[in-house]
Structures are given as structure tokens and as C-alpha cells.
Amino acid sequence: MIPLKPRADLPTHEVFNTPPHQGDQDLWQDDTALRDGITREGGAWAADKLSAFGCIAGSAATFARADAANRYPPELKAFDRYGMRINEVTFHPAYHDLMALAIAHEVPNFAWRHRQPGAQVAHMGFSYMLNQAEGGVMCPMAMTYAALPVLQLNEGAPAGFVEKVLSDAYDPRDIPWSDKHGVTVGMFMTEKQGGSDVRANTTRAVPETAASGAGAAYRLTGHKFFCSAPMSDAFLMLAYTGNGLSCFFVPRWTEDGKRNAFYIQRLKDKLGNRSNASAEIEFAETRAVMIGEEGRGVRTIIDMVQGTRIYCAVGSAALMRQAVVQALHHTQHRSAFQKRLIDQPLMQNVLADLALESEAALVLWLRLARALDEAPADDAAAALARIGTAIGKYWICKRAPGHVFEAMECHGGPGYVEESILPRLYREAPVNSIWEGSGNVVCLDVLRAMHKEPTAMEALFAELDAARGANATLDHALIRLKGDIASNADIEARARRITEAMAVCWQAALLVRHAPAAVADAFCASRLGEHWTGAYGTLTSGADLDAIIARAMPN
Ligand SMILES: Cc1cc2nc3c(=O)[nH]c(=O)nc-3n(C[C@H](O)[C@H](O)[C@H](O)COP(=O)(O)OP(=O)(O)OC[C@H]3O[C@@H](n4cnc5c(N)ncnc54)[C@H](O)[C@@H]3O)c2cc1C
Image 1 (cartoon, protein in one colour):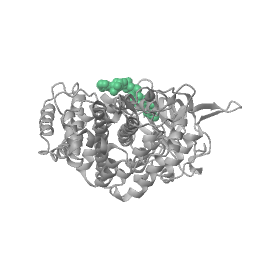
Image 2 (image 1 turned 120 degrees about the vertical axis):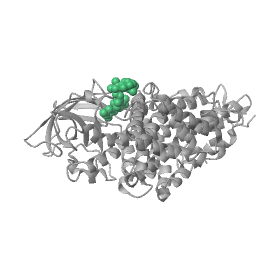
Image 3 (image 1 turned 60 degrees about the vertical axis):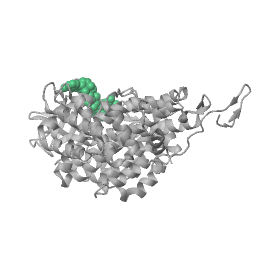
Image 4 (image 1 turned 90 degrees about the vertical axis):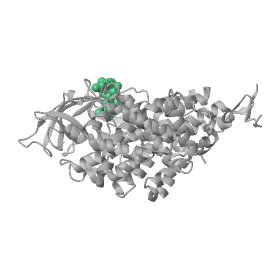
């Protein structure tokens, strides 16, 4: 029996065998696989900043703020005391603190402020660490990050706006963007009658003057059904002109210093992601400027969607990493049947399996981030980023809810109560899979890339084939995958199977090339072996559980 000191004397009994509070975490130093991966994929030059941020994002104070921001969710203040529409959403002070912390550390714009190889890799490193503490503020971070290329590449954004996106100042004031020190951007596509199928949009855009097309002023009338971060300073929004679905820049305040004409109807009462407001909004003659080519709105906004999709993958990977950290902490300090939980063979299998899934998610988003870094100068990297983002978004996000649940179960009852972070992680886990392209839609996007962009498959298989010969199970899986995609029969119905196989093979290939043998071997034997059901704690005998757990253990 581990000697455990009593922690308090109560009138009825001594309290012992309870884990200590976790306190501050160092999300950088504690995470060997993250540090190795950032270096490998080209982000080592940002290590000092990442290291400093790891302590800030992982501090008990940041986690406490995240708890408060979610416990006291935003409220809609549609009207002021005199009945005037103000469309304000008020937040707990902790939310503003987290927004300020994120923006001060360049979480929404690091890659755009430091344009050099490895910038996307480092950028996603910041996102990964903060996401472990809090997912809600990551929504405006993701949209702001993803909006910037759209605003820069397409005609129409007002002069001076992009500079404010690049600011490291959080300015929560509800005033015109031109008077602010820094801005955030939202994205409104989904309508009541259709979210995946944005062509079902009914919002109409009418030119204000004889001028039309990119850069021209329009008035928008219609509605949007899911509008996250509605206090953002501007939104990219889809609406129909007579020439098709087009993309618009909608400022919160108009240039003449008036509140733009839109009406927040209510805030969603959400399962998770509660610190972040998501609204239903009516638009009536709302002032807007067209961004990009008329009738090509989906093409214009798709770059933003791609950007937010990688955030989803990173976000879900972050939830899994924090779930592993929590499970390791608890099981190290809790005993049952005269042995620490972490020393019980079956618990070791569960913990090691959770650690494998977490590291597999990590290596995949890191590789994707490098592809994003290389994409502007390398067509193969661009093709890999395109198909890879859909693959990673699907699989990493799909694995998170079950993973977090299993980490919760490692805690027994205390994992199920709100003082623990596990319920919040658990509630947060499904959203990344639902928004920015739900599972099926993303898998159909993989098929689209397969069929319409042949270089995407070449780039993917170049990546997979680089690991050939190192692990027989992986080699067999690659042959199976090639067979699966050779036939077009039932291809749409098989899109999930195909995407999953691509994702798992890719994770395995990356682990084989870059992770310790204990991790790579166990992953291939489990995920690519014959009897894998997806349940955790089912690693095959021979897996080096101690080595896998030691690698995941915070230092
Ligand atoms: C918390 C939250 C915040 C959000 N914030 C925003 C926001 O800020 N801006 C915004 O624009 N949207 C936002 N959304 C909306 C989100 O992007 C949509 O809910 C999502 O795109 C799905 O659209 P839908 O809800 O209309 O579902 P549907 O499009 O009706 O889809 C329902 C299901 O059908 C599946 N499906 C769709 N088409 C096919 C097909 N061809 N074959 C097989 N299956 C299919 C989908 O994968 C999904 O599982 C938010 C959603 C949530 C939950």
C-alpha cells in the first residue's frame, strides 16, 4: 500500500487517498511530443515564445478564468434602458481576460505577423496550448485567423482593416472598428434551412448604387441561424445577388459611425463552448461591401473555412492532450486494491491507449501546419494541405468525445463532477466535429479532392509511402487503402471508411517516422490490426505500456 498522508481530519473520518490539486501546468515543457514536433516541423525559432506561453496558458489562474467564463455564460442585452437596439452581448470579466491574453500572445495572427517558414506550425502550437484551458475564446481566434487571407487576397476589404486584424491589442469596446486598437472577425453562413448546403441561403443582397461587384456597397436582408462571436467587429457573410451567392464584409458599425442594421434575436443555449456566444440574427437592409468576385461567394469564403477547419483539428487534439494529462495526474495519486491506479495493468492499457490517440492527433496537425507553411511556394504541399485538412478535421474531431469520456472514467466519480475540468472538456468535445463542416460533409470533401484534384492523392501517397518498409502492419494497411479507393462502387457511402483509413494510415506513417518505437509499434498493431473496435484499453499484448505512459507523462 502506498503511504498516503491524511489531508484533513473530519469529525467522522480521515480523508486520504485523494489526489492533490494539480496547480500550474507548463503546457510546453511538460509535453515532450509537442516540443519535438514543433522543432521537427520547422517552428523551433518560436520556442522561447511558445515556452513562455506554455506557463501562462497552463497556469491555474488561466484554468480558473476558463472555468468562470463557462460557468457564467454570455448574456444578450438587445436593448438599452430606453428601448434602443444595441445588440450587445455581455460577458463575464474572465472571458475578456482570456481574449486579451490570447490576442496579446498573437493566438489569432502569429502566422500572419511572422511570415517565415514554420510560422503556421508555431501558430498552431499557441492554439494547441490555449485550447487545453479553454475552447470558447478559440472560436473568435480561429475565425479571425482564417479571415485574414480572404481579406488580403480579395478586393473589397476597407483600407486599414487588415492592419487592425494584425494587432496584438484586445479592444472589447463596442465602437466602430476604425476607432479601435485591434479587431476580431466572425463568419456567418448557416441559415435555418441549411448549414452544410449554403446554396440554400435565402439572404438577399442589393447594390446600394449603380456600382456592383467586388468593393461595391450592398444592403443585405435575411437571417443567419448560427452566428458565433457576434461581438466581432466585422463578419464575412454569404448572400445572394442576382448573379449568385456572394461574399460580403459586414461591419458591426457603419462608416458614418452608426450601429449597422442587424438584430440579434437570441443566444443559443449550447451544450458546450458556453463562454462563446452564438446568436441568431436578422438582417434588414444591413450595410455591407462585396468581397471577391460576384457569384463566387463560396469560392471566396472557402479559404476561411479551411483555416477554421485546421483550428478544429488542433482544438480537438488539445482536448485529448489535456484529458490525458488529467487522467495521468489522477491515476498517479489514487490507489485501489492496494496499488496505485497507474500501476494496475488494465488501467495502464487504458492510459497508454489514450496517450497514443493524443500523440497521433498531434503529429497529424503538426504535419498539416507544415503543409500550410509550405503551400504558398509548393503545389504539392498546397494539395496536401487541402485534402489533409479535411482528413485531419474529420478524424481528430471524431475521436475526441470518446477519448475525453474515457479519461473521465479513469477518474471514477470525481471525473463526473463540475469541480473537475472533465465535464467541461467533455461538453466541448463534439462541437469541432459539427461546425465548419460536419463529419459527412468533410468526408465528401475528401472524395471531391480525390476526384477533382489528382495532385492531392499524389501528395498524400508520397507522404504515406515515405514510411513504407518500417512496419509490416502499416504496409498491409496501405495496400488495403489503395484497394479501397481503386473502386468507385458505393464510393459516397464509403466516404467515412476511406477518410478514416487515410487518417489512421497517415497518423501511423508519421508515428513510424518520428515517434519512439514503443508508440509507433503499439499504434500500428492496435489501429491497423485486425480486431480494433475503437474502444480504449485494448492495446495488444507486447505493447510497451510503461514507455508510452512515460512519454506522455508531464515532466
Ligand atoms: C456552437 C455552434 C456554433 C456555430 N457557429 C457558426 C457560425 O459562427 N457561423 C456559421 O455560419 N455557422 C455556425 N454554426 C453552424 C454549423 O456550421 C452548422 O451547424 C453545420 O455546418 C451543419 O449545418 P446544419 O446545422 O444546417 O446541419 P445540416 O446541414 O442539416 O446537416 C445535418 C447532418 O447531415 C449531414 N449531411 C449534410 N449533407 C450531407 C450529405 N450530402 N450526405 C450525407 N450527410 C450529409 C451533416 O454532416 C450533418 O451531420 C455553428 C454551429 C454550432 C453548433
